[in-house]
Amino acid sequence: MAVLIAQCSNGNTQEKFQTFSSEYKINQSQDGLLEVNLIASINKINLGNKQAYALNYNGQIPGPRLEAKPGDTIRINFTNKLPQP
Figure 1 (tube, rainbow, N blue to C red):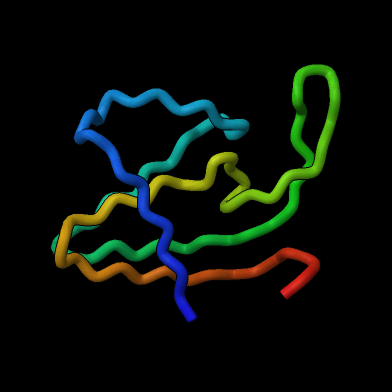
Figure 2 (figure 1 turned 120 degrees about the vertical axis):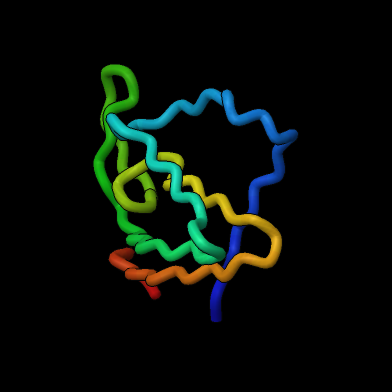
């Protein structure tokens, strides 16, 4: 079973994102195909002066942004490194 989470926007590409990762990855389709590797895991993050465990994709909170055009093919290679199925 595949799950696709879509984000709707007003087309403004100058949006600001807050992330706990040093880089925010945006994956865009090319030639009608969006292919990405997603790894779900739990990592320790810093929240101010405290630490917490958080679910994430590819070590990012939020996970990488996926952008595809209508009619594009989306292929997600998913690896579950969570302690539960």
